[in-house]
Image 1 (cartoon, rainbow, N blue to C red):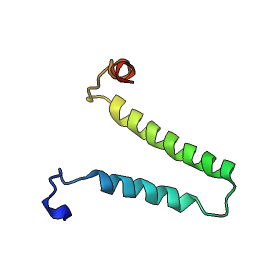
Image 2: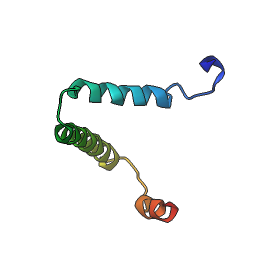
Image 3: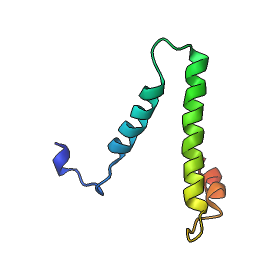
Image 4: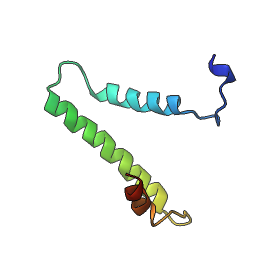
Length: 74
């Protein structure tokens, strides 16, 4: 069924499954809720830092008004 669905060689499911795998590596069912949230926030911050590094390096162009445009849509 998935074979007939067009994609660009890197679909959303692969990215979601990769992130879920990273979360499952650091979380377990016996952790308290506050510790789980702390770990998830660390993962999110790490991903944001990697994105900022990649988008702000020399030679990379990015849209300075992106946040303003997203606020208009919200």
